[in-house]
Amino acid sequence: MSEFFQYVINGLSQGGTYALVALGYTMVFGILQLINFAHGEVYMLGAFTGLYTLRFFGARIVEFYNLALSVGADQASTTVAILTAITVIVISMITCATVGYFVERLAYRPLRNSPRINLLITAVGVSLFFQYSGQLIFGSSPQPYPDLFENLESWTFGSDENLLVINPLQVFVFVTAITLMLILRHVIFNTRLGRAMRAVSFSHELSSLMGIPTNRIITATFMIGSSLAGAAGVMVGMTYPKVEPLMGSLPGLKAFCAAVLGGIGNVTGAVLGSFILGLAEAFLSGYGAPTYKDALAFTILILILLVKPSGLLGVHRTEKV
Image 1 (tube, rainbow, N blue to C red):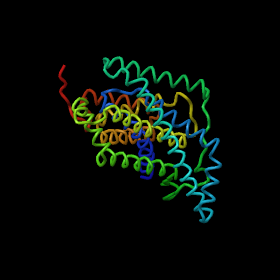
Image 2 (tube, one colour):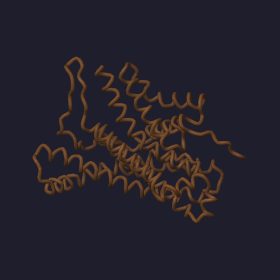
Image 3 (cartoon, rainbow, N blue to C red):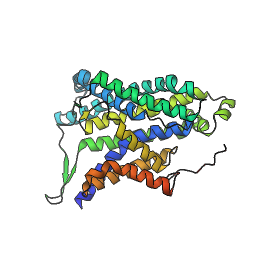
Image 4 (cartoon, rainbow, N blue to C red):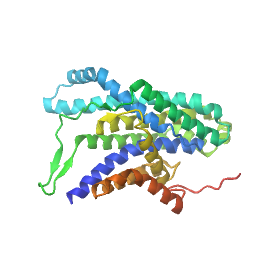
């Protein structure tokens, strides 16, 4: 029984990172009807931003929090690790939001009135540009990621035969992912920006007639989605302590599959599909077929397109041509 709960914990942690990336796909598609295939590379840039932030400024950040906190050594160790990780995630989110701004402004906006195939080809081109630029700048070899949680002991429950191990990093990743999702939900449903985003997703023309700055809203959507991908990149780098310039390709495609599973364009559906995919991969790996884990997402994608193309929570829309 402990194995089952262990796989649930692993799946929820993995699903949380998928969800942060999938939200970027689904938000951009909901507003522009565009699959931003460069989104996985923004996730990669987020991971490298976190890596170099920790490498060059990590000791200063830790020292700052050590001086700022006047608590016991054990508690300080945990608190400082969490605060340092949050600081690095915020820096990565800001960097990736800036990248998202320039990608939308320079690559996609000039082609917004062009046929969709032009935008799709551009998205693939931007993805390749980031991949090979990353190899040129960062090198092609995997680089180790600093482990902020290495001094923290895992929580264990049960006996030797039914031992459940919970890693503090897994808890941090899951809680952080859920927190960011709740913040995004608040922004979408309870702020003027969110109402404008929903209006633009319904109709660009009507939104413009109502005085909504459509271009700014689309740019803000790219920036928000990119910032979430940057946060996911840092958390994945901490969980699997190595990063390399091509690391965004497969997770990006898996997150896209999760978004389609939940219903592309539906924020709640993207989160649901991501957690389903994360749990399915964890159980598949744990119960004897780890070599097929990477193929699972695409198998699910094919099945959902055959059975329910709109996804679990998606709504079928009739499009006039």
